[in-house]
Image (cartoon, rainbow, N blue to C red; front, side):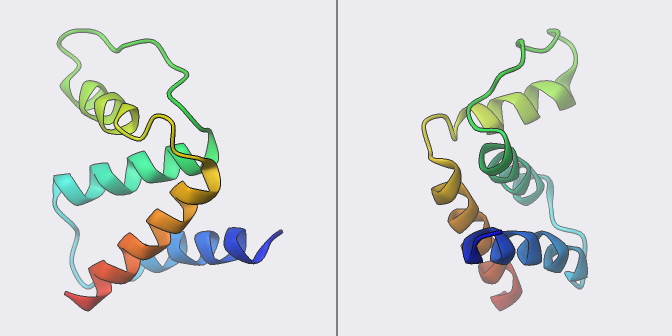
Length: 86
């Protein structure tokens, strides 16, 4: 495991230690960056029209399309660090 991958895994654990549950926008950003960092570009079908939660997740992930996995990992790490500064 590379140093970046270790920092990414540590950030995923650290986010669970936030003093309060983040809002939906923050959760979607974390979700999208995590998916891009672990899987890459969206590889799923567009969700059903009235599945609003799945659609929100899909759309958030799709906004990260084209970001390299390593860049997404670093963005996730930076985002988590910013959350702890607030």
